[in-house]
Amino acid sequence: MSFWISLFNDIVVSLFGSILSASFCDALGTRRNRRIFWFCMGLIPLLQGWAYFIWNTEFLQKVYPLVVHLPLMLVLYILTGKLLWPFFSILSAYLCCELRRWIALLAVAMLSGGAVMQEIIELVVSLPLLLLLLRFVSPVVRHLSGYSVKTQCQFGVIPALYYGFDYLTRVYTDLLSSGEPVVVEFMPFVCCVAYLAFLLYNFSKEQTQSQLQEVQKSLGIQLTQAVREITALQESQALTRQYRHDMRHHLQYLSACIENGQEELAQAYISSICKEIEAQKVQRYCENEAANLILSAFAGRAKKDGIDMNVQGALPAFIMVSDSDLCVLLSNALENALHACLPFAMAGTACSIDVQFYERKGKLFLQVTNPCGKGIRFEKGIPVSDQAGHGIGVQSICAIVQRYGGIYSFVVQNGQFILRLSL
Image (cartoon, rainbow, N blue to C red):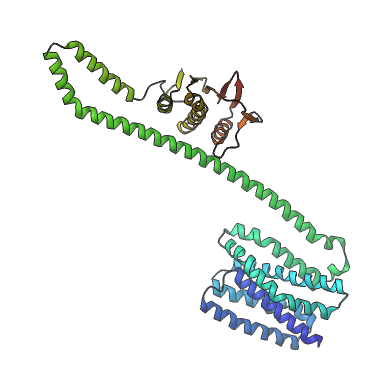
């Protein structure tokens, strides 16, 4: 009786691992593949049963990879056209077979049973365990099949180590049952190494992701500022076209004033037109065009909000800092300053933003001063905010300054928030 239970259990575990392997490598996606697979699944157990009657159980265990795993791998290769992932799928399914065996061993240990009880419990738990794995684990494993070969190998290293360890210490030798410490502690050692490798890999991925997020934020800020600049230039061009279109009317009006001897009225009209045109041009603060565009755009925004913006400084046309980084630095610093001044302007309180900058010996120095409210919280010398969407500008400034090997500081003195940086 125990012989037939053992035979039936071996056939069930073979089907358990085969179905799981096929699901892991997505070999059952079409009706044709399912027909081929189930036809082969009928042949492999027959081959396995025939081997039971030809060879003894001990020898069959040693050739099990050749009798079951190798034919299964060939079938999956034919169904998927891939070789590496079906190989890892079979190893992973073999590792999952340990779940049913361990559950049975735990039950035997608790109930003081024997080998027959172990095999019966393995048979009982096979179907529910298979359904759970197919429902929750298979989709994740199939998703990994689309990754690079390097990632696939990282996924398959643990199942491969277990597969080799299990056969070398339990099937081909009795090292595991001998209780040799180096053998018993091998899999815990593998688990420890895998855990440390996971920590290092996850930390590296987190750093890379954080850097990508910073780049994305910087690009987003640059894009926003570029849109603002383009909008300002479009508005300026539209006004220029409007003035050009209305020039005939202006000249006719001026001619009429002169003919009627109203020179003062003509002069006042000319002055008003010049002021309107002058207000629309990009103000020049220095020789650097990128800095002029940013400062001019924010000066216009500040004026609309009733905030004074005082700019003192000089930058040459070309500096060591790239235009994109300069755009991010100035945009973030001035955006934060405007945001801090808005409550004062809305309350009718006079407020101003003071900007000072210069370049000396290839280094850029920038200071932005603005009034601020109380309760600004600092962490490691950097202002932080719990509000959603705030604090990104400060992070971008710090990231750029650090990339250039510069220094920065954020301080609050006498109700004024002062940003200083050098890079």
